[in-house]
Length: 375
Image 1 (cartoon, rainbow, N blue to C red):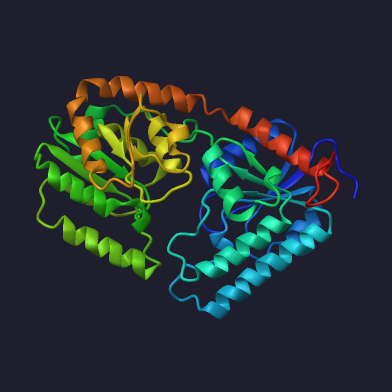
Image 2 (tube, rainbow, N blue to C red):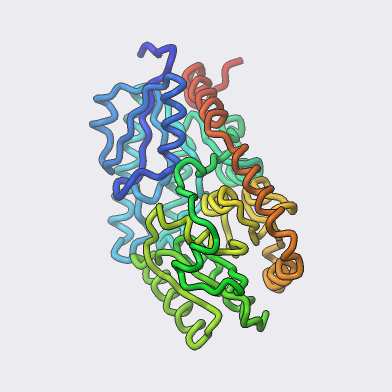
């Protein structure tokens, strides 16, 4: 196979709904660098990939291809999907097409068959020519868990911002009027898909312990109802807030153009995750100039700092409540913290990220074969 001076790349992305803004922004800047980029979404991707004759196939989220977290998935059907996925990648690798995997999350949440996921990841790591993580902590996790024999494969390429893809033209007063929120309320916003690992119940409990009627907890996001564990979790949330006047739930899909309304109506955005590697929602909130409350987990502490967030240790059971109290004790500092976060987000430049990604691609192409480094 003759490699091009500028590589041709295929991105594998989820096959339902709109393409993720992360893929859109990365793709836009890669194309500006001359990369010939195609996007393939079908689960059975091999035929289309081979017809495109790429130098690189770049994989992002794994769950669309193995789906071990759905309630109707049997072990046998999940194994068959995993086998289909890995066999396609093996054929791709045999055709001397380089494989790159970006690790957005190390584990598939709510998986029914985590052992199958681990097998899939181990096989993917063995086939990959490069593995991309978004921070040094994630790099260490991937190396320690799956890649200790070939740590040189694991590269750090930061996550970019969403400032260009999210509308931001509404002020706080108008946003609150649209949402029927009083100007005098202090609004703590949770925004994102509702799933157990995101710690919404813990946030509700900490909010109750505040005993502040002037503090409105606004929980906004679409539940992941395809999974019984998630559906049960949502039921617990609804039961937990029943009768509370200072908690609002809006458990539905929020259109991209509406995100600005919720963000700009809030005083602070809370991310009470129990586990996380990379949080796109946190980066989105930073782009809206929002101070944040978040645990020191995964890439969070490398993405945001104490000048823009009330960071806490997730192992401390009272730490989330303490972070909420600290936020309320420092209301006058919140605008400055939000502006600091906006500047941090603006520095998450997609052009530099695309340049670093292209370096990863070129390194893969220059390498003799999988598993070996050039001297």
